Length: 94
Length: 94
Length: 94
Length: 94
Image 1 (tube, rainbow over the protein chains, first blue to last red):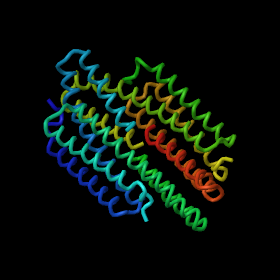
Image 2: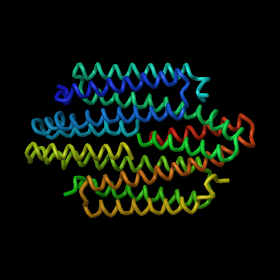
Image 3: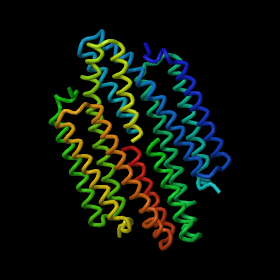
Image 4: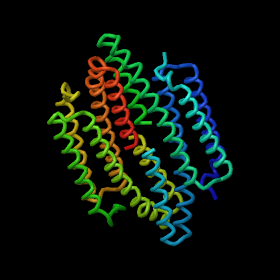
């Protein structure tokens, strides 16, 4: 069960918006927009994606990791925490 | 004139691919994919966007900043370097 | 109670190593080392600091957040998760 | 010749300050400071290091890359730009 079920609609809306930003970038490059202005939009799209990641992460901690700790044994909880930490590491290095 | 004119097609292809990744993310959330798997794809899409940024930046330095230094006076070159540095700062903090 | 008590010695050693890297950077700048070589070392020191952050974060989730979920009510657990997410956001934007 | 010669003193001062921040982190861990407070300081130290990197990068572009473009042939300029872009890529992924 996905941990983000309570904010699925919000996440889908955010992803639509990012998709629009990427299409906007395509248009900017297609019409030879000045590099720095394109880069500014790349930064904005990256920030929007990172914000999606943080919402997913918070839901994951509040639901999936929460459930592993509340229901499961300590081994399952440790595994969930390690898995979440690795996901955070990938986000920080992206 | 955009500094990336020689690799415009490559940039447009890369952006199409990122757009596909974002649509893939939408599908994953829509079908309740496990949070960590969605996060892994968010990291991949972010990395792809950062790669677009680095290609834009290299073209910008090799063409726009290059031209400002080769043709322009020292004031124009300094302004271009400051502008590029600010764009890099935005990318690092995105 | 700090969540990292079981790996305090390891964290202290890692921080000593980062301190050594910063002193190394000071020496490099003091002896006019080529910019790119200094930047490579700045990246290495940043990576080492981020690694300290990830260890702290994993301990925090495995102990403090774990305890809030296991012992506390749901409000306390939610507060801990929100606090951790904000810390992750600061690390991603650093 | 290092590109940062005009702001060497400022860079050395900034690095001293980062070194102090790392020592402060050591003290915080040594005295069992709450994880989240330590993480906040790790973010601050990382930000300070990234700021050192941006200053180095701006000096490098304004002096070393500038000189390669102004004096050297186009091959040397391209090599400098590629080298700078790789350094930026390392900083973004740190």
